Length: 256
Image (spheres, rainbow, N blue to C red):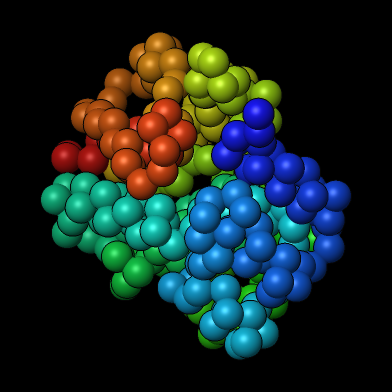
């Protein structure tokens, strides 16, 4: 007997075959309908598919499957902004080292509207599509065609400006359905990214927002080797049980 999971898998495979091709509106809405029972599932930049498509936004197949949709991005932005507002009065700099569609960065900025928002995207096809989409919608975000490490090393942030980094590297084989997500196996490992951030910005107030899965190995957080001021785990109950995404919110020097 075929299950709903089979439908999700089949649609992901179909879009995977077009991973570097722009999708039609019908393909986007069919993916939402057949995989999640919602033709508007791939809502981004605050718009349902019919609206963003009519305004000239286009997504690659891989981006439609991998992007953070509006409902999740909004929740992520709310929780990050709450910590940011509670901790400091200075406007922060927001960085997404794996920007993709930049929809997560868009939503974090929505909740911290005066902040500077910077994204890095090393895949040229994704970068070109996202840069065009942001331009079409006149969304004021900085997007740079570099990888995580190069982007972070080139980033200049004054010492008195807090730094928020949304960390969501490709999961790949790090996510196993039976055991969940292992942050040690992402590409690159989350620990490697955290070490680099702490090394590059030792005098900054840091808020690290790590994307997690409902079932994940929490030992990877305790093994990061950083003296965090605070830590919190958020899981967003908006999908089927054991398929929900969430955040690990970690601060370093945030309350100094």
